[in-house]
Amino acid sequence: MNTKLLSLSFFALLTAGTNSAWAAGGGVPTRDPHTAGYVDAKEIPDGYNPSSNDDGNFIIGPTHNPAPEMVVQDGVPKGTVYNFTMSSADSKIYPGIHRDAVGRADPDNPAGMIVNSYAAPYTRRVGVYVPAQYVPGTVAPFIVGADGVDTGLFTALDNLIAKKKVPVMIAISIGNGGDDAQGSERGLEYDTMSGKYAEFVETEVLPLVESKYGVKLTKDPDGRATMGGSSGGSCALIMAWYHPELYHRVLTFSGTFVNQQWPLNNPETPHGAWEFHEHLIPNSPAKPLRIWMEVGDRDNYNPNVQRDNMHDWVVANENMAKVLAAKGYHYQFIFARNAGHTDRAVKAQTFPEGLVWLWKGYPIAGANDAPAATATTAAKSAP
Image (cartoon, rainbow, N blue to C red; front, top):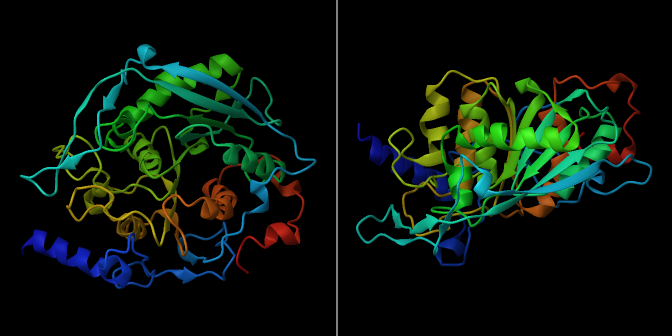
């Protein structure tokens, strides 16, 4: 059997649901969640989220109203947010690179691109959220986020911790080293298929957080989560996949599970994060990971010059849902109508409930004494 032709035929099937405007050059296509080849998914009433108790595949939208937990609430204890800066001069793992321009087409290889980058310094900002309920000196669970300070995360945690819907946790939002995609420092950190970024966080970031702010971070991987959007989302899974002894919980918006690793053709993972659904997850024993994913119907589609049939974010995330289900993972996958790449409105709607789903099974002190859900909070999840 010609596996290359089979792969291309399956890709053509998956992209059959794109709209005619794209074919006419109208921009990013709007995908139909019921396209042949996509996963079977449950339609959720417009304006609602799937329950945080449910695994599986769901379709939401087109209306995306912010969850109440994404808004600062009177009477809710507020955590303290600290900020510090890290320099490439102090890093043994990432000394720094810079890309001089966006990659250009490779005339000898339509599936490739030409990128020039060189050594260059950088600084990164790190935000640390410590909840008001944290008891100094105690060991706490935590979540690591990508792409810098995430005030929405901190607000959501204020509200969710107060309601005892998630554990009292530290949040660490780590800025990237600059630029984006192939040949950039951000791309090197987030798109490389290895344990290197998780090792950077473990050895260079977390010790600073503990020493600067007097917190103790758990070593239990079940009490450690990763999250991010776009390449930050693929990075979140890469961290847990290559170091499941460090992280068991992953949350992604518009995860870049595509062929964006650079340089191309790494012999172990020649198709970058596309390998997750192409080979790694299907061909590996299931790992103790809990994974929440979202993608938008107008998510990225071939945003660069590479023409390799591995740059459709919707197909990539649909494929992820398919292989996770086949291997028996606990996962929740949301296909959002009326949504772009890392869509802010979708995040504002789904993020709190996604965090609650993510932390299912982890002990929450006093959860049995939590106040009953109000009509406002109950309206977030479909009946």
